[in-house]
Image (cartoon, rainbow, N blue to C red; front, side):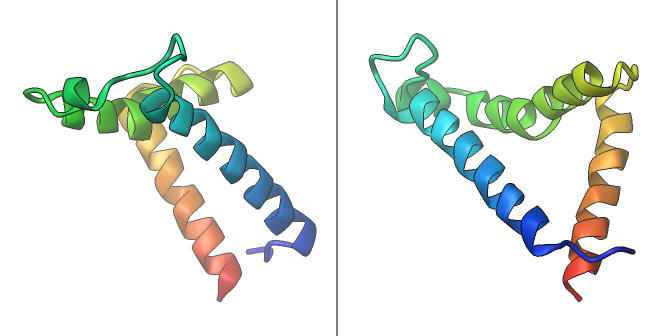
Length: 92
């Protein structure tokens, strides 16, 4: 596997930072129309549902939009696992 270049690593940091900042708005900015209050996240099964959306359904949706490939959540999870392996292997 091809190792990540310095440019790839810088791009990863930029994307990571922007995504984290958007998520901070969702959970911290009460003025945002996308704000989800902490008491809503901790009610019932909502934390698990939020994590499922964050880790599975939203990334699958974005993947479908970028590739026009119709994958379900489990299919995307397989793709995500390969990405984890690819980027882990590139650091070794």
